Length: 165
Image (tube, rainbow, N blue to C red; front, side):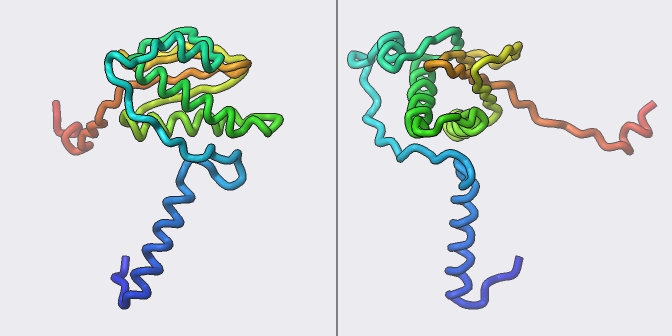
């Protein structure tokens, strides 16, 4: 990449970089709109914590199976509900878009290797990392979010394999 010659070129390159970053965000222009940014209240202290069952009942969520800390479960449930509410005016929700947004949210917050499946009817058999699995439904939509283990790929040189006897 060439170095910018002037201050105007630097500004132009910075604006192009910002535009590219905005395009890579969760909602492509052709798909459903993202919900407005949510102002999150400060995390409750130990004596103010609301039981997860109360949150699930309040949001009309049926928690089917979970191997995940309660705070993470609450985050995924609330984020899924916000996504559904933001796109409630559309007759047909795009399940791929919902799954992509949830996956990106958890990848950003808790590291890579999160996988998400959203649909009305699906079967699954997955292997997940300990503490990284939740399966729940909101109205008629089912959500499966799980994390897999990430291992570095070690490639051996073909030359080393050739001379090894």
